[in-house]
Image 1 (cartoon, rainbow, N blue to C red):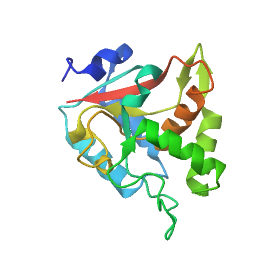
Image 2 (image 1 turned 180 degrees about the vertical axis):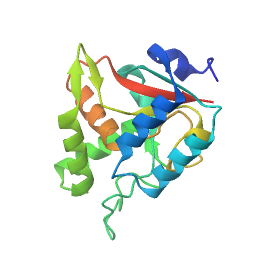
Image 3 (image 1 turned 120 degrees about the horizontal axis):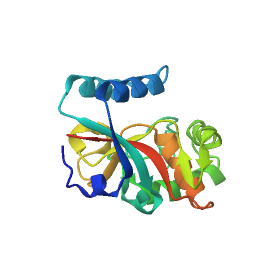
Image 4 (image 1 turned 60 degrees about the vertical axis):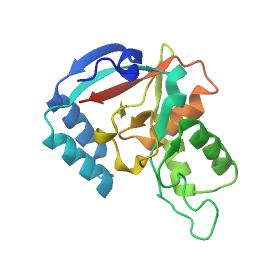
Amino acid sequence: MNTESVLFKSVRDLVQVSRTEFLDKWSKDEEGKADQAMKDLLLLHRSREDISYFSGIFPTSRLYDLILPHHAEGQEDGKSPDRPIQAGGDSFQNVITNFKFYMANSRFPFCCGRVTECGSKLVLVDEIIDPAFIWITDERSIANADHGTNQSGVFIGNGLHRMISIGLRSEVELVQGFKVYFGTA
């Protein structure tokens, strides 16, 4: 367990959760919607007993450290860009900037619709967003493979549309952070 990582030190109110609790919550969150990459990642986590899991509050001041994975849902062949997030992933800041443009210009309607739907389900209590279930890590070996290999930073493990809706919302509201699960080996 890497307790010296910058990410580990930046998550507030850190509480260790059992592997079983984490995997059960993640499995439930993915029911009926997991793509093959997410199923493979979940299997990886089920097979590794060396990963420790925590819950806590990730400060919005660290949002721009996030790297979001490649995303081709609702791909638009023949247009540029042809997918919401290019192969190899992209920085959170770039993704939020792009999604503002996509939403204003009716690009990637399915994906933007999911971002809007997820945003409507976010709960804000005492300046903390509760997005239901999102997990993050700074260890590429346990993150979504769609992040590519040239990025370093904090990777999201699931909840792409929720993360984007948090980014869009935190720019217009006073938000101190959001609830998150954190994995480290």
